[in-house]
Image (cartoon, protein in one colour):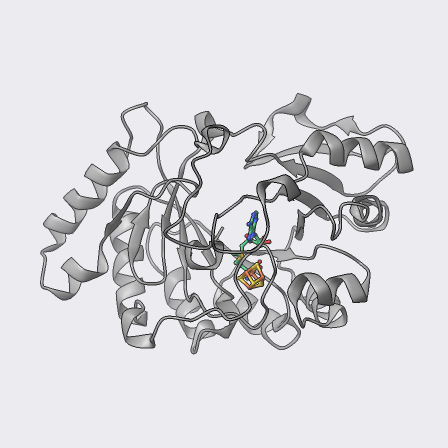
Length: 326
Ligand code: SAM
Ligand code: SF4
């Protein structure tokens, strides 16, 4: 079992399968993003090697992310092999949904259990502005396909950005009346220098909650306010689904954090908002033994940070979100 110096058990690995993406969301990457060459990325056998190693260390929850994981070549075969790895009990994916219309059923059949789909607005024009060229209907088709395939429960992720979609939270929350989805609103995190957005464009959860309540009435707390993963959940009266708030900026959930992140180039990052990282792929390629890599992972987990430094003006500069995976 992998634990850190604060006594947290770390058993959830988020793997970024690629830094490439078929969209360019304004809060995630610059329009002229330069992607890494394929040779620098973990190859399929290297991803599987690390999945097995982390599973041996007691990790049982795995999430595939990106960039956009569905644009990776052989994604269905890779999911099948990850799902078949002993110790992998939970396997999910975070995706923009654009390719799910054709991939939802093959991914489900390969062993993927659930998807989180990003959708920041229901307005096609605003969607295009936020993603720089995306088509809302592609994502909507993707959500429908995921639901039909049984990739449930569906979670919809909306990053809220002032000046773009802060007024759209009520329309998105309204989806939960009809659909048994978890619609989660995410506070935008600043990755300084990486995107043009400033810290002042982050909208805090309490403001989003107030906007929804003004439009739709009081939100009832679910689970007495206990976190569900990273989200605090609420329900609109009579709604089938739930509304969640992921308040990474205003109320970090470090005490509950059980995550590690493996970037597409094989670097282990223990906190989204802290720059410290340890490269695992280079030693693997240089012939490090399994025992050496296992020790490197355990040592890195041990010093997992607690707390981000945003209030002190410390923002991560070494990677944009698409390179870490969210
Ligand atoms: N391409 C996939 C997608 O968009 O869902 C997976 C990768 S994306 C980096 C993972 C999650 O991070 C998405 O829900 C996305 O909206 C979110 N995200 C990206 N940039 C963010 C930022 N600056 N602050 C908060 N969340 C962000
Ligand atoms: Fe691509 Fe996801 Fe980043 Fe949007 S949030 S640019 S879809 S990786």
